[in-house]
Image (tube, rainbow, N blue to C red; front, side, top):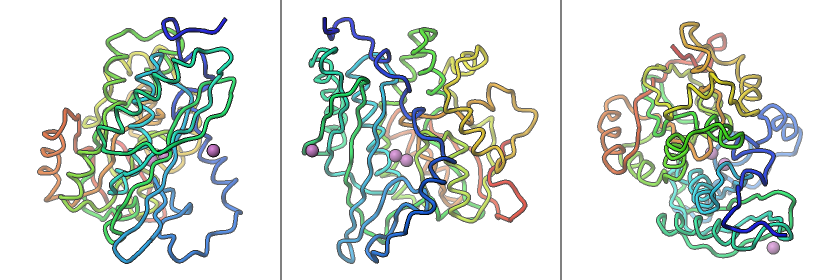
Length: 352
Ligand code: CO
Ligand code: CO
Ligand code: CO
């Protein structure tokens, strides 16, 4: 008997959950390190810098921005899963300051065990977000799989001179972050049946929110560097920005929002496997004040699905940008820290 749309619990069809299923950063770097680098002069941003998307120059004022993201479900409702997958995939293009234009579906689906209507709902949810973003769904590829997996490859356009990378943060810049952290913890609790409905609603509201308005606002404000925060957690992506920019980041933990319920669930032991991988990968390059609680420290490493944009912008433009972002959408953006000079001995990210 196939499981129907009415009684499907999507997270039962996955071993991992969302971006927490990502391969660990260390493993990935080891695997990719020895591969030959591309010699194509038009490849402006490639694998080397841990940026969110590749940038490929077509002409002097036009470049393609290419990215792909897919994962097993982190929520039980197929429509929401589709919305989250689309918001998450689009986010890499928004982080690069580009305009997404086309999308391709990537599908793994247990078609013998699960009703096709479930997949229809996933794609319907995804399409609703692509419509909101003004992006055309142009096709896709599906394989039969034991687990449900879904995601998208997104192509965007940008003026190569205006592409935003994670490598442009300057000493003195302010750091804005646009979403609360902790959705990985909530998603883990969902999978184990431990999250209450209000927490799940809050996490879904955050994960389905597009980073579109935040991206447009940051471009107007003269953004220096940006990345979106996903599987490697806030600290993982922050240290990538610090490394790529040759600076250090100082974060104020009291300015970082958390999804309601995530600290409590974390203290109760609902931790995604990816959280410990992130701690192992990044603990050496970050410094967290001992005054910060264990649960909050965990959240700093929590793998986010469809997380916020981490934006470095000149200090004098930061408050104006923050107001614009929070005014454009019901965003929970805040100024979470600042950029300081980098040096070989200092940690890449300090949290106090
Ligand atoms: Co990204
Ligand atoms: Co990505
Ligand atoms: Co094909």
